[in-house]
Length: 278
Image (cartoon, rainbow, N blue to C red):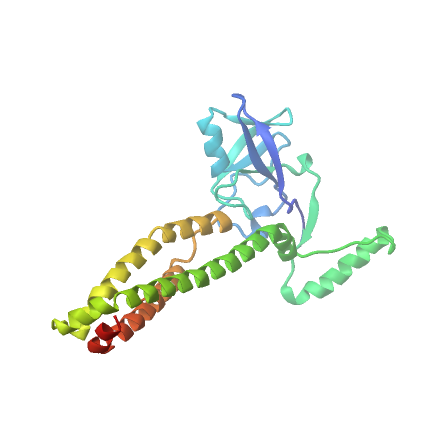
């Protein structure tokens, strides 16, 4: 099936009657749009006149908050004939509108079975070369590549942040290890005196492990909401709670296990030798 579809993002600005400017993504409503985009929500109308638009809920909310019943763009008035919850390939918080094919110069997309993609691409290129000489380069991309190209910068930023986060995590672990190690060395005398006064191995472990566990919670607690907020901003969706929980639980258990081993080592030393060295 060949359809006219404006599949590139065309972001433009429009000024409301109160002077406020908003940015919206323009899409074209071609014949068979809902079927081609596999929309679960039916469209209010199947076709649009040149002066009519369908808006998503985000844009409808913005217009309603500003007392607008119609939409102006490039000096042209457009009547809103329907609202849909979301327009395909746009974000929930993105203002978007469907326009008539007569208002935008369309590109073309071909929808076919994956098994037929190579054959279809070859046939399309033959048709194109009937009108476009071989000397003029032409690239026929699939929808996935177009989306990936649009998100390339975002993927690069997320990748850089992932590397920075990993390095920060390693440095944090080394910092915690160094802090606990130095603290337990300074507390050797106190631990030795406690053991002489009858404190059990378990009592000593629990006292210091509880202290460092509280410190760890104080350090990590503010970081978790910040991490979730950052992920939502970067990916425009909430991070997988299960993956986040497992990651942070593993990190916490690893740090607590490291602290436990350091305290256990300090508590296992002979108190007489410790006091003598002190």
